[in-house]
Structure formats: C-alpha cells, structure tokens
Length: 619
Image (cartoon, rainbow, N blue to C red):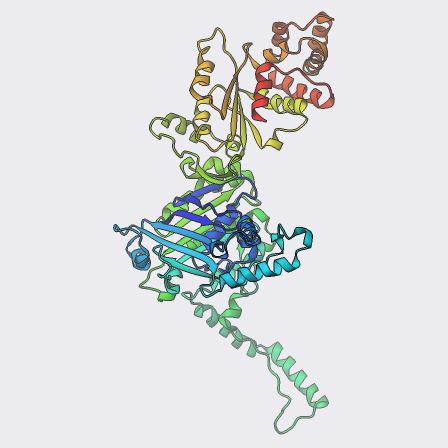
C-alpha cells in the first residue's frame, strides 16, 4: 500500500487553491529553500499516527493556516457590503488516496474505500471551525468592535488587521471515504504510521543514553521486546556485591563508627549494606548507548556524518520491519509506514551521498507493501543516483504564483524518448544534475563556455547568474537534444542553448534542426556566426578595450608566444584566425585567464550578438 495522491489546501504556504501531488512508493522531491517540502511532510504527519519520531500535534496553530486565506477572510469581514452569511471560515484540508492494498491492509482501510473496485481508499484531515460555533454572531461582533476601534478618517475602509482569528474555536476531524460522518477510528489510524526525520536532527543526542525522548530509548522500549535475560545478569551482580570481602570490611568499619556517633534505638539499629539490584526495564534502557566502527567508540566521539547514517539506518531498520498480526497485540500492529527523510545528505561526504543515493531505493523495494519512502534533498549527488522516474521538482510558477509538483519524466513518451532517458540516466552526475535545482538554464558545449559565460554575464549586467537562479550546464559536446527533451517538459522557466554553427562539417545542419525542433517561448537556441565560441568572442573584440583584455589573457596563458603575438599585431586589429590558433590547444587555460582579467578590470568586453541576445532572453 502507498499514498498515491495527496491533496493539500490552506496549510502553511499552500493556499486555498488545492495542491495535488501524485506520489510513488519511492519519491525524491527537490526544490529551492522555503518552497514547501517540509510542509508536504508535515501534512502527511497530520493524517496518521507517529511511533518513534517526535509527535506532531494535530491541533493546528494560527501560523499553520495559510496567511493569504486568513487575510482574505479578514478583509471580507471588514467589507460591510458582504453579507455575514456569505463569508466562509477558511479550512485546512489534507487528503490522501491510498492504493495497492494487500489482504491485511484491506481489513484496516475497509470503511474508507471510494470506488466500487475497492482499490482506492481515502483518508482526510480537516481543521475547521467547530460545528456549534455561532459564525454570524461572531462576525457581527467583530464588525462592531472594528467600527469602534477605527478612527473617523478610516471608517469608510475598516482596517482588517484589527480583526481576530478564532483559531481556538477550530477542531480537527479525520474521516474516511470522503464522508465527514465516517470518522476514522483511532485504533485503525494507529496501524498506519508516519515518521519524519527532520533536517535538524541531532543524531548524537538521539543515540546516546538518556531520557525517554531519545530515539534509541524509544526503539528499545517497544512493547514486543523482552529484556529478562539482561535483568537476570544484573541480579547476579547483586549477589557479587553482597559477598565481596572489601565491601564487607568497609560495611563493618562504617557500622562501628555509626555506633559511636549515632544512638541506636529499639526500632532503629545502625545497620548498613551495599545494594545493587536490577533496575526497572525503563531505567535500564535509558542507560544503553551505541558504539559504531571497527574500532568501536561512543557515538559522542563520532563524526556528524557517521552518526547521521547510523541514526537513519537505526530508524529505517525498525520502520521497514514487517509486523505479524498473529504475533503481536492489536494495539502494536502496524500494516503501513510512510517515512519522510529531510535532507539525508546532512553532514555526509559526497562519496557517502553517492553511496546513499545508489542504495536507499532498495530499502523501499525490499518492503514494498508496508513501506513508502519520500526524500527531500538539495544534494546533486543524491539526485544523480536516483531513478529519474521517481524524481519530482517542487517549484512556484512565476506567472501564476501557484505551487507546482512535476516529475522529471512526466508527460515524456517513454518509448519515443527512450534514448534520451537512457542517456541522461547514465550521464547525469553531480554537476549535470544541477539542472534540476535551477530556475533557468544555459546549455553550452564545452568547458570554455562554462567558465567564461558567467563572467561575461556579470561583466555586462553587474549581477551574477546565480542571482537569477540560473545554472550554466556543460553538456560536453553537442548532446543538447537529450537535455532539451527534459527541459521542454515544463518545469524550467527558461533555457538558452549556446551552440556552434559547425559550418563546413557533416553536422552543419545540427544547430538549425535543434532550433526548429525545440525553440519556443521558453527555449531559445542561439547559434554562432563564426565556427566556434572562441572565434565569435575574438571577432567581437578585435580592437579597443576588448583587444587589450584578450591580449592580456593570451600573455598570461603563453608567457613567451603571447608577447610576440602582441608585438606582431601592434596597432592593428587582432586577426581572429591567428589568435584562435594560439589558444586552440589551451582553451581551458585561456578561459580561466580571461575570467581573471575580467574580474581585475572594470572594462567590459563586447558581447557577440548571439550571446547578448541570450542574456536578454534569460534575464
């Protein structure tokens, strides 16, 4: 079983227009900061019970309700032209559609089905004004108070900010099958569990001995565990303490001294003893910690990365286990677990991120019926290793302002574009997967463009491409078509291709074909007039300030031939072909030196037309 569709309305940054999210048994969600990835996980946590992670209260607070929804509600109250009967109190709705149930799960969700085939069940969380609340009277009282508070000059337009919001009059309800009258029984909800590993988890604290709130204790203290053998060993220590000669001698000495300084009575003799008894299981478990490594040391002495992996593995080892209804009490039975992990890359070396990304999907596959995994991440390493079909982008549309949730391969014909999908699945690395984290993209052919284009933009515009959320992606050749197949899929705002004309080569029609096949309002293909990027840049700066910058970069690249070339050139314009021959085998070095000169000098290069038009488009 897994959550197939999640619908969220009026929860935190998700507004009155419901956000529908299609989930898979394993889903990777990527997106920029503060876009709502954490809120997505928190929404799921409102539906089901939590077993090991810190419990999230189902009764919401003022800030949990969408700000715009509350503001609109207050403005309607302040508008006396709107009838009190026509004002709706905002409601938070979290709706999950479950599918792919096995026999045991069918018995749990049996009252929540929404179709005749009994293969889709629905659970809904609703946070709304209590049913017996006098809405009309409350609105009229608010308007009356508002009139009194408002100054004479503002009475024609009442200040909605003075209106209270009655969050304390709200109640939550969890119901099944889309029918509010069909309230979900708590004993069934407890069989569906959600656990969230938040991004700020303190792995060291959670794995060391301590109180009842530590993760390690909560796992050890599960009701189906027995520690009678451990306690029996502690009882043997009790006997050893009582029979120890050194302790017996000390007891005799202390008793003798007590007889001298403390008066014994009929009811109180000066008798002492040493006591070591097995503590209650609760106290025993609080004293158990973990060690990790081939030379095991306490987790308190481990690095953050190792502890983070241990923390994740420990929790997943418990959540991924199968619970047999025949072997546990009903209150301990769990038939489904949804696990959300925020930023699993926290504190991990890139190699460990690669390893985690390569293997974590297998955990879900091993427990496909009982476990659903959702990861949120900012790691290009993890994004590069996971299945593209399971990777979704969470972003906000610039035009509508609406939040959108879009799978990388959504709407792509898997058969028609199988070569592109196979290419990207094999070719994506931590550098190339940056495309999924960008708002805008500039695709270039090689390392020189990747180095120089950001510097040219900053030199010309006085701001960085990063400030636009724009990434320059080097496709290492001319494999633009595979990347544009993904880009055209709709979740990028704009994409520019900077490519060479290839005049006189077998591929000279490649760029024009690319332009005709892909160019639209969001994709622009810019083609050089000359045969290469370097020649185009040289040709645009053969004289003046541009000439000086190019020659300075050449001298830095070739300390002997560079000055000779400058001397031969003299006051003449740079010869494009001859200059290119000087740098043809040193393109990367020249690119780095050119960027250095641009950042040292306030003077600007003249941009080739195809690049200036690209910058105008991407801004």
